[in-house]
Length: 539
Image (cartoon, rainbow, N blue to C red):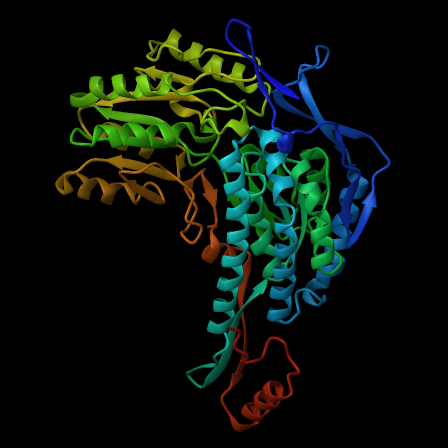
């Protein structure tokens, strides 16, 4: 089979699709998972298209398959199953021994690894992620689960010791919160989604999980792994439109945790549906407007390479992408000349060709980026690179915009695509003011060599964002490091160590330190009558 991309003159770029990555016939995914049972959908279906163009004249985008267009009734059935499994904290899963939950999770990851090639192929076709990054996303997710298991063991070991203070003896552990509604993003439909789902369930919560609008078919190969690994109702997987499925669930007031990576407008609208928002815990990864600040003594080659990777990896469709660049006046011309030349040398290709630039998964995205460019140009910006803004049916070549000012949409909006606004400065107050006034506060990248300049700047930055990257682009990993943000960028903290705490609460059993209570505790431990009161030590 061949794949097609049209260039700016509407000429076809045709490439052979390697057989191992080809999808010859549409995949009709007919199943869902509720209450430990694989259900077969008999209603309407949603079409799943790839923005990699079809080789058929009458079909502009390749039809990858179909997924169930489930309704409110099934959404509430999934909630009922999760509620039954949790049973106000008395269910089998939340009261299960820690090593038993760990065994379930280990079984899942072992079964998941068997589906690697299938999931990787669907990542490429569904969201246009290149081969290396698709493989990396899968492998990173496996590593994340294993690291989560190890961290959970550590948390449990730390909680296996009785504390004695002021005549009160206590055993303090972390307990589940209840039922979690899990909604992941399309740009990392496996890794980011599982960064929510995995810590949520391993801590004893039950979950309803609806895949993102793009990257939905790739969850299908994992349904049986979830079914075989966890007790009924622990993980319930449904398909359909977000608002139609999530809204009725939130209205019941039975959701204890809203776990969402996406846009703040979605998070706000779902929160507003909950009748008791004060009881709703939020774990949210939202927008960001991460700047690069390039000082006059920066290593230009290093800064250029890091900014290209930071701004354009996966076409800039990452919350951790560099979304705006501040460059010192003294080195502005040298930086921009080198930066634009290297961007124009980038190649457009298919995901399996491992090019940095690939087709965009959202059909409307090229127009959106074009509109941002037009708005900026009307207000004084220019496209500095020769190919900037070239549009195809499913792709827009990265555009470097300069000079950018606060009147332009691209100055404030998280563009989530291949357009790079640039602002020059001679006083460091300029980028600092931007960050202070911004609605977002996730990360910043600082480029420079002088410790006298970097030191005070770092001290300012750490109070405006949650990660300062020194001479490197913004990023999520390693997953053991905290991942969060200030202001509208995030609520709660993810990554291995922090996510387990975000999806749990400290709970303890206390007793006055007297002989009667000591004897009761000894018997509880010796006879293993309680899964909570124990001093077992899991290696």
